Image (cartoon, rainbow, N blue to C red):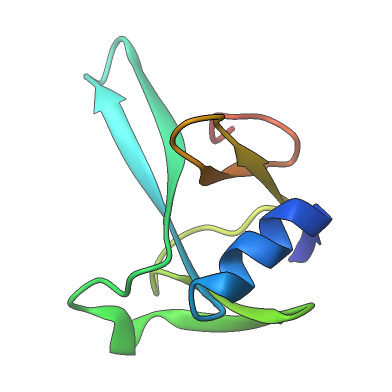
Length: 95
């Protein structure tokens, strides 16, 4: 997996401890649903079982059974509530 990070997102992650947790979250139902990526800088309760990837300046973690994209993009979004958004091969949804 190639991790592509903007300088702003990298600084945001580093300022919060240098750890980023990314998981896929399904919204909707089987017929009409979408899977998106959620990020957090705080470790979830089951973080010890997650897979670790080294990125430039921080560590990225994904759940053990999550399918990986060829490219994971990380960008900083939000004016009032800053957050890191993860992009699955350039898309906001998982394909």
